[in-house]
Image (cartoon, rainbow over all chains, first blue to last red; front, side, top):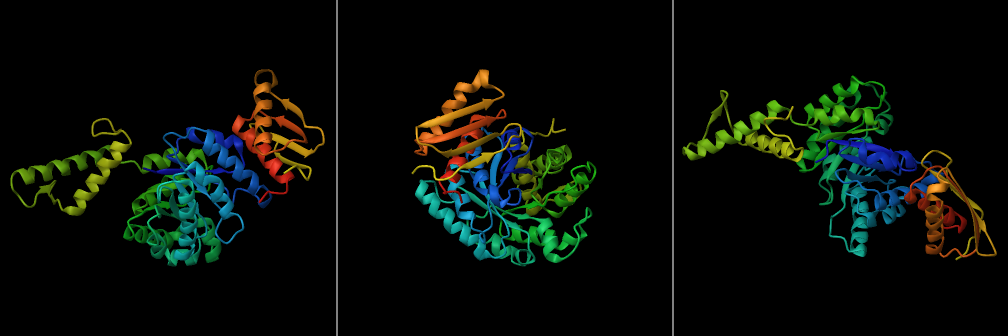
Length: 293
Length: 90
């Protein structure tokens, strides 16, 4: 389960080697925007070695490769796929065909390397107006898609508007991505909050993302991880309620009742499904109803 | 394939290593500077020579300035410098 993802510049050894201990559920080794064209080759080798030799137990490994309209992306995949990262973040995914192009080459490499099919997931980065409009087609394009990821910096440049802390300019994109991802039954991750010195703003931004339905959120600073992890973890009250729902359902079944109310509200299938997701998440985080907070 | 060009990789920043390499004629000539020379000099030299061997470099003059890099970082910087020196960098 990924609540937080931390971007690490692909050619910065100091950040790469410490990436696993900063508190992120996943780290994103960035071969794209954080690396100048003259250093793409160096970053590729450095990230490959970091994946190969460093222990990232408990922290999923994501690599942001360069986009499929560059000369770099195949070499990026050639370098990192043998190290079996959990996910590939594909920038500037504008159409389903962009995702399918990457999927086809990853499939080729998986076969060559003897890796199980679809063992490396794909996470399209939606950061253009075209990508937002095609979000569902992208999310549903192939089995390899694990999640959609919103990139607001490039998106607002494409939309020709200013990126603000309040984020009104990306309201449509956020909701559009959540709906598209859920319709395709994949996860969805929110864009980073980019003011690394605003310790209050990150809480507001993360709470908004959670309220909209995002699975989690990316960060460009380790300082934002606590806010993201806490916001996207179930609260004690939510865990308690989830257990009460499942207990009420079990009791109704034992009594042969078709429907049951809890706290004055009918318990129906969506409430049960949400309760199961909450408990599943709590179990993965090692939380339970007594000591979650 | 032997080295064709003089090339470098890495930086002088903390936790990194800077590597310079140029075509040679008389085996591997290695010049190593490190902030942890006393403790890890031998291990660093071994790592550098291993990478050169893996990449079939038999004749080259190599200078490595280690700024407290982990072995995987040193290996990456040497490999990048070699690939650049062979004209194979992408």
